[in-house]
Image (cartoon, rainbow, N blue to C red; front, side, top):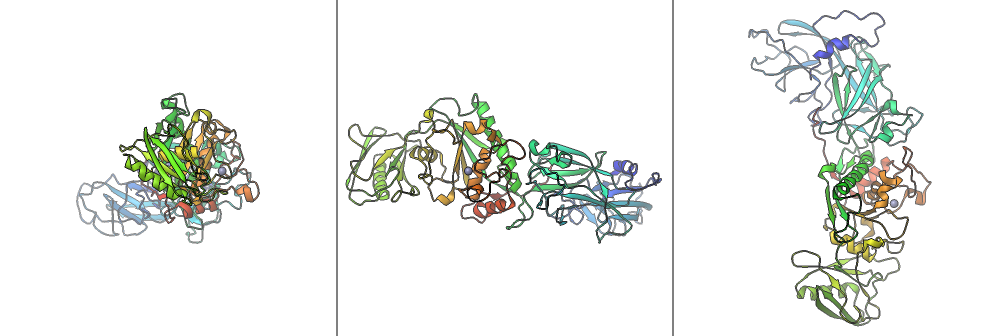
Length: 603
Ligand SMILES: [Zn+2]
């Protein structure tokens, strides 16, 4: 949108002029220096060789009828340039009469007289810059705004603040706005929020700015991801809700668009600036019994809606690290029956070697028997059993587990499917035990969610219980770069509402999270999933308060429950950097993949 409409509006609202509004020549053009990056190519539009349409361009409508070549010449200056159908024209070069859209673009702040089509015009260009708390400039093209990670504070800028930004304007005093309006939009151009009429107060200009110009600056603006932070009374006058990958549009009070700043992750971390990364989640909603109701919601539709909303809420908190889970609509979510008993745990939990005996099971009614010699390991016994299962027409897969703290080597699971890929049913023999061996035990995994999922305790945390393994291994895609998120109706004992299986546990199951209905109902609704995903993304089983001081505002705090802005919802810059190191693009198993900014569709 051209600024031409804004010329009169801006001129009517002088910023620092003490006297009456100076009369303006009708050909005075007030423009913003085009420092943003509307095509997301990391080159400021004012320096770009291919200039996208955007608020920084002022379209010239009054071209002369004649084609006198002496008139069709670009202005002889680098401070303002002409752009013909998106391509800049060098100063003093000819303008093609075939140009469809001819626009002016300001490149440096100041007041300039240019000659265009034989007419003298005045261009007054003002510039907008952004600065963080340490007075580092945040470039509109190569950097971005980040989400506030500190709770609301009475102090304007807490010393440790690295996110809030002040916006500076520099230009001719009679042409620059006295207030900014911040309008935010998603990447797709859906309007999100507006922070109106933020005062721009006079401030000394930076050293590189001409002494003829005046400078003004806003107070620090907090970019936040949800309404809890947006409307906190301490900071609502300087907070605006935005979306990861979306934009903050700076406008005049009259709605004239000026420049757009992107919203991404933290700018200053041990691993450098974090722009935007994406983790792929697979949501699996497990019914309590085959054909039963979904584990949350009243029906399937409301279950899917609730699951998507939960992921969306988790994404809002993780956007503080520049991490997203994609749009809720694109989310991979299915509602499934609990799995059949397709898993045999050789060694059950403890994984002791054999003393000599026989393993005997039935797979879909077929008897399978293997003899186990003394000192055979659970792994060797599982392999022998898997071969025997394959021989009677099924597909068996051997899956090792991390040893439990007290276990000798760890149980080894045999997972059995039919040839068509469906889970096969394992049952005990018609008579006699599954294992006749005195030390090598074997257990059939059964998932019974009607009495709650039996979850791991301190000793079997690494491996998960046999029931958990039966559940998770049934739905695992064995792609470690995706995170499985299972919703179950409930856990067997009270207290537990979510748990995670992470890489450093060296288990066959990792990068998975289980949550129950209580998690969604509780006060922790806004962060139960975000917290469990935190264990996975940080590859960290512990909590900061296990070792250090209790910080109940941190997402990874173990026991905080508080639905306000002071609840457990903050992620530190150090944690963002750790997520990049542990599960980012250079990690052994990559969960967080780069998700580059795209051009914003302007509403
Ligand atoms: Zn935890």
